[in-house]
Structure formats: structure tokens, C-alpha cells
Image (cartoon, rainbow, N blue to C red; front, top):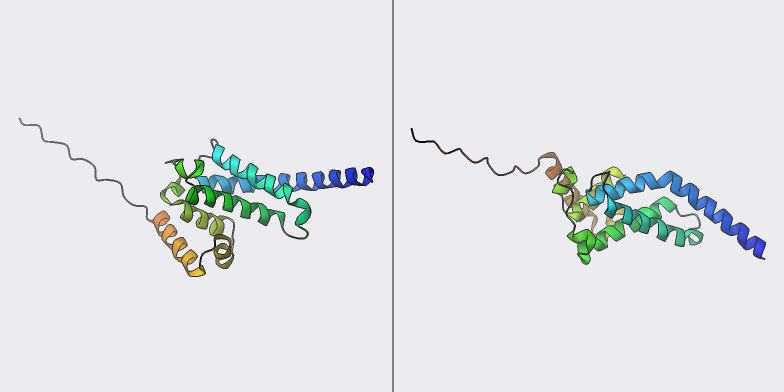
Length: 165
């Protein structure tokens, strides 16, 4: 009995390690886009990734035919949304990098843009994942894209005062 459990545990660990080797980079990139942190300084994104991978590992035996990447991505999105929108916890209070073009977007807009455009999640699936009507997801995505394509202008430059002669 112990040998069988040890064998199953080793198999589970190998399967999960293979999954992480293939998916962690892309999930980290998605998390970095969500947090709008620089790629080389992304502690919030790394915490999101760690949480998503830990949750996926904890659920590994129950996935039974489900795509573990979809499970991890869903947990990543849930954690980001919960931290950024509801609790105003560490993700909500932290400011995105001003160098990131995605910093122009609200957390909700970033989440929808990342899911729809980077991850390729269908509008209906994104709506179901976020608990929003499909039309609302489409409107938010369109508004976010308009912001990204036509960013708001900064304040007008100050005019230099004429020096009396």
C-alpha cells in the first residue's frame, strides 16, 4: 500500500513539474501584464503565480481531464481581481509601473485585455470567469483598447515667461 502511494505521489510530482516547466513562464508573463510591473521587478506578479501554482497543485488529483493551465489561469485572474477590486489589498494599493503602457488601464480593464488579447480567452468565457455580462466585457475591452491606442495627453507644457528687456 505504501509503495503504491509513494509511486502515485512521485508520478503526481513529475506530472506537476512537467506542467510548471511548460506553463510557468507564460503564466508569469500574464501576471506581470496584470500587475503592470516591469518584467525584471515583478514581486506582485510572482506572488500571483506562486498562489496560482500552489492552488493548481492542491487540486491536481481532482482536475481529471481539465486543463491545468486553464485552472491556474483562472486562479491567477481570481486572485488578481480579488486583490485589486475587492479588498484593495497589496495589489489594489500598489501602483503599476509608469513605464508600462497597461498602467493607463484600470485593474478590471487590464484583466480583460490580458485575458482576451494575450491569453486568447473568448469573450463569453471571460464574462463567465469574471461574473459579468458578455456585453459588458466587450464594452470594457473596447474602451481599454481605445485608451491604449489613443492614450490621453499629458498636461500642456508651461509657457516660458517673457523676460522684460
